[in-house]
Structure formats: structure tokens, C-alpha cells
Length: 96
Image (spheres, rainbow, N blue to C red):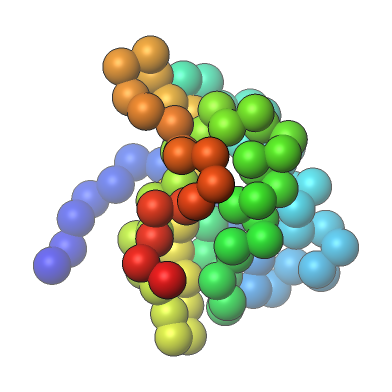
């Protein structure tokens, strides 16, 4: 199944130095406005990043796995609009 998604930015961190990944992701997220999202592409489950988002974004973000490995993970991270729910505190809503 193919779906067309509109993302403000796509960040493929597989080729970015690890220490530069999270700062790039957060600076890109900070530039989003309500209703916009970015696509994160990674070679492993970015669950630690989810917890960092919970701590630093006060739960005011959305987190949707679009692809869950085993070789590639794609996560849509967004700023919710007033009528959309943010990511639940304490979990990412995934099936693992």
C-alpha cells in the first residue's frame, strides 16, 4: 500500500554523525507549526528519542510509526493541532 504524505522535512539520520542527530531533529521540530510534521528515517527503533521528546516537548508532539524495521524505521513526528491528540505520556502507542 502506498500513501502520499506531506512532510515539512525528511531527516534520514542513517548517514549523520550520531552526536549531531538529536540536535538536528529537535531544531527541525522546533521550526514546525501546528499541523506540520517531519519524517524521521533510521536504521533502528528511535524509542529513546521518543522519551527525549516526552521530556523536552512536554508531550506536545505526535509520534506515528510508518515503518518498523527490521532494517528501516520511519516515524512521523509532528506538532498537533488543537483538535488532534498528542503522544500519550508513558508510551509511544507502538506494538512493542
